[in-house]
Length: 229
Image (tube, rainbow, N blue to C red; front, top):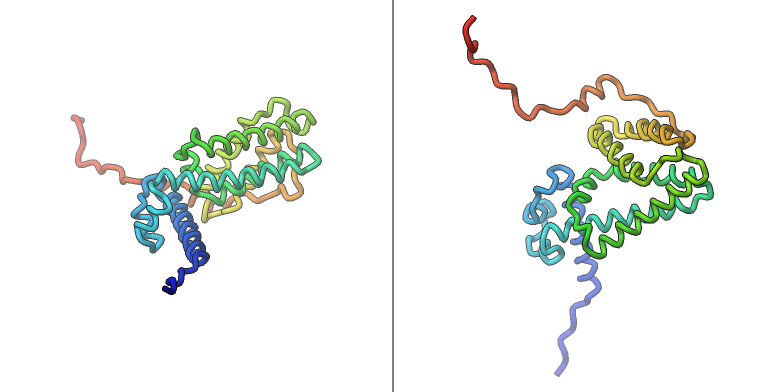
């Protein structure tokens, strides 16, 4: 009896990987807009794939968020490793801070992903600890070399990224590079030397007005005077 021909496996694996990437990129867009309120059904609908396809890759939203977290921390680990190749400790720290800030500015889903990932579970906890050690080394070397103020600490790295993220989120689509100006101000405050392209323009008055928060509800109108004159 002649065996039936087997379906080639490689295209199926490629299809599965394409679907996985499509689901993750779609989830990023929805999370950037709506935070953690999205559902796997919404992600499937937006991605144009079947709900079953999403559930085969990610059994629940937590698994998807953890996959997005792993992807992002892999990038931060790569940035920290690249920064560590600089011979000058101050340049190494500056490089990491600016590269990480750019990544944060462009990734509007990052804050939600970090807030909801299962950071105490392996292998996420291991990645988190690895990044912590690399950042600690960058900070320690810069402080020892006198390249940054002596009280600079690893906590300042994370606070820096929080602040830059807030500016980037508010100015996204209005002045997408505005965060660079404020990043440089903070780096100077930390005691790091000014970079060659440190001078950036302030936003215009019109741009600033566009960054003001939109009202979610209208103030209630008075229906009459209260009390007596």
